[in-house]
Length: 302
Image 1 (cartoon, one colour):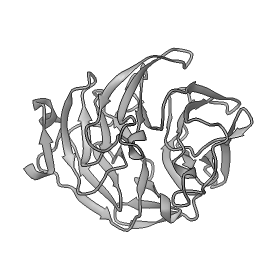
Image 2 (cartoon, helix red, strand yellow):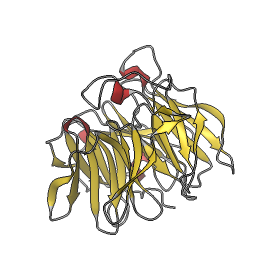
Image 3 (cartoon, helix red, strand yellow):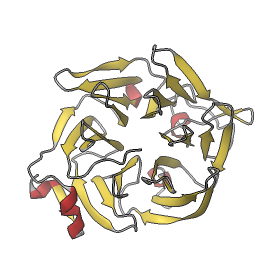
Image 4 (cartoon, one colour):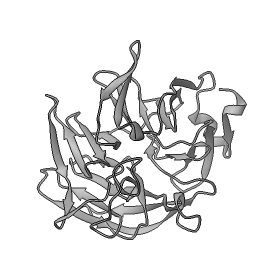
């Protein structure tokens, strides 16, 4: 990497980089790239291009192609414990699972009889429970979904039980909850609030919660306050460091909140994921583009 590609704020960050690696742009044909998810069984990356109402895919030697169109303005994506795709759909205001045969199962569309706003990002824990955020971005306009009034009246974080029988409210004091990620041992859950995207005086921070054995969130506290832009999607590496999207690239924070460094990207970053055979390739969804970069650490595995 060239010195112009990163900033070192703490000497520990140099150990997380791969000095001879380079930032590669895999495509620049998106309107707003989001929600990358990597499938190790097929060495395949899938991500959302929200305003174009499609999902794209990339694989080594095959390049970029359309995975699904229309996609119901999908946003965040992840894998469940059986390797199935789990997606947040702005347009249909629901969380879905794509089965191995290609059929789609609706996991959540309502809470207490009211339609969800526009599920945004999603993560699956080792028990198979599915956690997702539900801000109102997809119903604010017709650009990333369909303009509508919120039926719930606030933006919450929810958990779907592993058997799909229950959608439980786990946090209701965010303005616009966005990206979320577990620590490697799942004892902590990080959740971004990106409300400053529409109000400079609103939150632009990541909070962290302790997770009880029953799946309740406790002891919520500030993890980091972002100085420019807003935090969006994030991932955790094997050492518990938090890699989060930001206005100027990808920021990396130690578990104690210390800013270790930045990977500078020439576009606003929305989300990222670790992938590749060794889980050490960072895929970065940034506005019109998808980038990749090999780093010196692996993504957390469960």
